[in-house]
Image 1 (cartoon, rainbow, N blue to C red):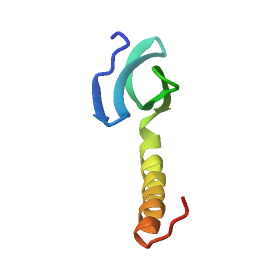
Image 2: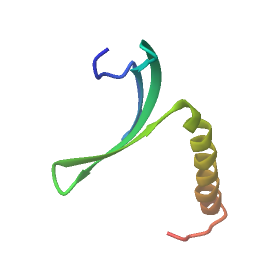
Image 3: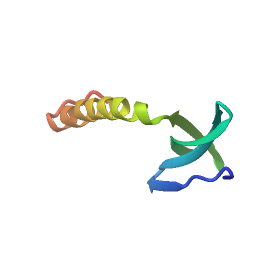
Image 4: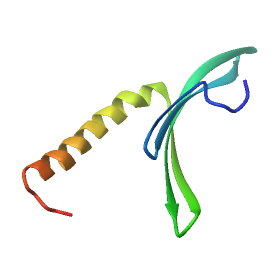
Length: 85
């Protein structure tokens, strides 16, 4: 198995990855997938920083709903000429 993702996507400084994990359940090893979302940036010269969010399958619809609302609020406000920055 290892500690490498089975798939990875990147858009700018945001990376999404799918991981295969294993867990013993009643003496039987079962595989399951999880995901990570990572944002990286440079801070103070050449020092790289990152934040990672680990999520499970049931978290994705909740995250999508929240991200859609955030996108609506930020993008629609800007288009309306609201300069809250």
